[in-house]
Length: 312
Image (cartoon, rainbow, N blue to C red; front, top):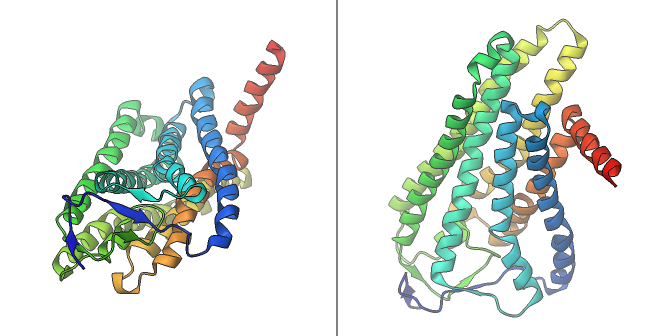
């Protein structure tokens, strides 16, 4: 059982779902359907926000960032998964694995911070409605979005750097369909308790701290909404905030399960199916959650469709 690191030339073999060969065809069909739907839904959100003046507000500016993020997030893993499910070549080079790990962690970390920013936007809209346009001016929105992206990539750089410093041992088989941190940590061939603690602290900062901030903001939002006397006003507030809360629940629930449980209790078999959820299902559901529960987005979509019909 020899060790290997960045000098290991053969890279890794992604086991994927070969443990369940009877599921591979069904998964290939399922992902082949839902991946284009994910791309279409998120591209639609971005396009509508650019074309309709009513959607050029802070809320939809951040939603555009989330949609672009989801496009990149799902594309960082799904095309390779489709190739692995359809073909016999399941290999990935060490450099490709490190690049995939870095990009995936960066995008996931960015989403953690961006969801906090979106919660702050909802807090300002509900709790400070008279000062909302003053608080959420375009420059602040751009700054908050930039902080989300920079913070996410910085967190990924730290964790990927710590991961690359670890000597890995054993067969070069990864029991997953992409290079994910918990699976790589299980391959470390020496005591990694100190490094694992550092990485766990980084994950707590990027996952639990944003989740706590979001929950805190929604406590204040709920208190403000309950003070609203108008039933229509309450429904509108709960509608816009409910969409964001649902996205938060889906994203953070799977992230906490995967990254904040002890490594000795992490199950790669279960982890693969959870990863399917947050790499495919959640990015696909985000546009549906926002469009189905939002009159502005549905109105903008009908307007674009009507213009298309008139031009024909």
